[in-house]
Length: 145
Image 1 (spheres, rainbow, N blue to C red):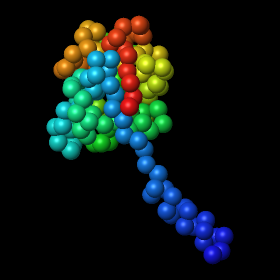
Image 2 (image 1 turned 180 degrees about the vertical axis):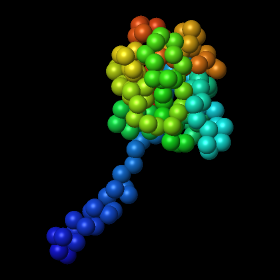
Image 3 (image 1 turned 90 degrees about the vertical axis):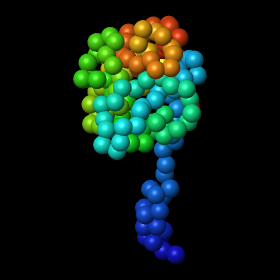
């Protein structure tokens, strides 16, 4: 087989074989970041904690520096505001600064160097995720698995 043909086959076949790993964002209490399903065109949906079921509402793909769910919505700081207690939502991916996250140890750090947190520090089912100043509390401890 010619070298050119081999390169052509690699260019056509290899991209189809590359997949991104789907992960769960698990809070310190074994609850997962969860997006309620509101239909295929829904977005700007609050992200809350819920019991981990491993369903598509809880699966996130890490693509570069974003977390994208199965509906192609990104984990987003609402309004791209770096203010403490700003809600975190699932919104259309735009590449905005409010959609960029870095995993740093057990923290997920976003806009303004602030951390993914649970509103009020209450790590319980139904709690809203927010952006907040990084601290040492259990509500900012995450496992990407």
